[in-house]
Amino acid sequence: MANLPARFLRFPSTGNLQHPLCTRGISTSSTRLGNGLVKSKKKQGGDRVLPRDQYGARVSVVHAYRQNKLKDKVPIKRRFPKPLDYSELDPEFYDDRPVSLELEDFVPENVFTAHLGEPLAYTRQALAAFKAFGQPSSSKWNSQAFSQPFSVVRDSTVKLLTELNVRSQQVRDQPAPNGLILHGSSGCGKSTLLMQAVSHCLANGWIVLYVPRGIDLVTSSSRYEYDARTKLFNLSAASHAMIKSMLAVNGGALKKIQADQDIVYGDKEQVFEAGGDLAKFAEAALQDDTANHAAALDALVGQLGRQTEIPVLLAADDYQCLYVQSMYRDQQYIPIWAYHLSLPRLLLEYAIGTRPLKRGLVLGALGPLHTNFAAPVPLREAIGAEISWKAAVDGPFAVRHQAHVHYSQGLQGFAMPAQLEVEAAKGWYHMMTRGGVLHTRPSDDFFLAKYTEASGNAREFGRAMLSTLQ
Image 1 (tube, helix red, strand yellow):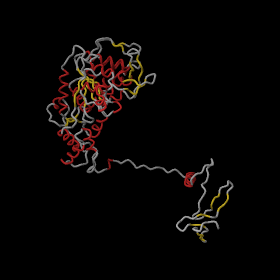
Image 2: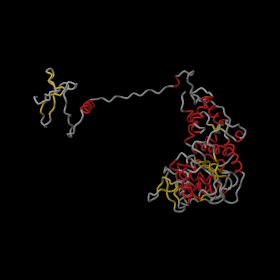
Image 3: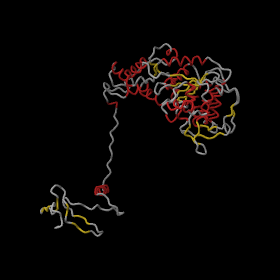
Image 4: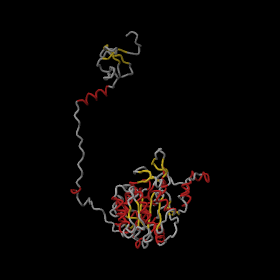
């Protein structure tokens, strides 16, 4: 102890050495252990040597304490709150019945006579089609938040439906490009306009094939196999689902059309004789497990393309996904281009006129949200869409794939306005207040604030309205 520095003082009451400015002491009483370690006695302010586990590793005192406690600990039964019984609530403050909007139907006689911004409810036929084919992800909340799924009439709605009426009267003797692609900024309402076109065509008696999420065709989410006959990769499960949806939506119209030739639709060379209606052919293809459903869908659409009695609409959202490298892989684990898949190739060939579609058209919509599946430069140039800044900088030296150029020839574009009209935004705002979706008292200041916050963008305007509890 004589060698200790003079700045340490001895306190007789504790037997510890302590610096005048420290509150923790250093114990001088210790015990020599068998493993050569020195362990201090349990004195106030004394240091401890960390204990060892069964493998000889040092463990913290807190960890050892918890392990000893957990040995004898009885598991606690978690109690979750009971679900609320809404029948016991006072109806004065709660009503589980949705607010009835009492809207007119989205049918041609109402669309062309309605004023700009007037909301119209989708018909039961259109809702059944959306249930069978599916809906875009951005439009699902509309059917969940309101008692009547509806859509607002815009200038672009009237222009597109007028174009569809003109195309329905045209009959082509020779194959010709008939693809019309909707393009515009992200969230401007292309998917909603495509749904309006589907509803309009069903109300006018068209036969409709609708792909609400084109990205699902390239994300390796369906069974596929190589067909040596067509040199394509068949999407059997997706083709089976498409035939089933077409039969459910267009069953009455398919019964009016008869096959003009024998149809071979199976690996066992099953034959559907000429003269039978296409509804029976679709049912036979669905019931036969050995049928080649990709070949059956190809034959079904081929029969619809050659007839002239009923117009046909082939609609596809995320149309640019038909041009990109898919997430499917071949035998060498090389990514498969989307146009080497059966269903995307089917839509592309009818759009550019390689295969005949005598009465009807192919209607697509670009989806700018999917940055991994961007629209190629030849497609954007063909339809007059805005080219990305990188391709604009490259100019004529931008990459133009030969297949992209081929499957973009003859396509026409339909430009969507970047901003939602004020009248259309007022129609949306009025329905939100009537439907009980908003928790805000309606006012002009609140409406203009949210419209300005969204810069007039349709999708951002809806998000701005729903993201407030003021």
